[in-house]
Image (cartoon, rainbow, N blue to C red; front, top):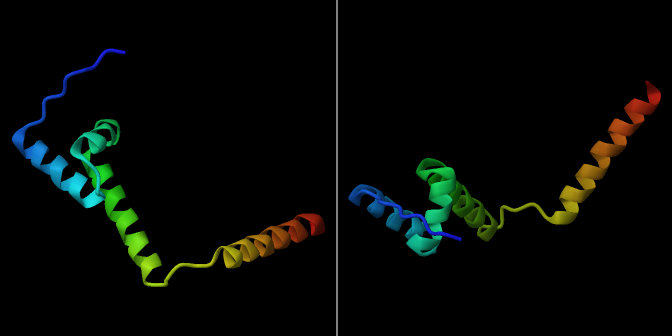
Length: 85
C-alpha cells in the first residue's frame, strides 16, 4: 500500500494538535479521522463523547436493565397494536 503525502497549513496543524489533545490521542492517530470525516465533524464527535463520559461519571447514565425493559415494553405495545389491527 502506498502512502499519500498530506500538507496541513500551520493553522490546521495547530487544530489537529488541539483535537488530538482533547481526544487523548496523538495527532497522527487523529489525522485519519480528520481526513475521512473533516475537522468540524471530528471535533464535534470528540466533544459529544467527552460530554457523554462526563455524564456517566456524574451518575447520569441509565442502567442497561432499565433500557432493556423499556425496549421490551415498546415492542410488546407495538405488537399488541399490530395484532389488534
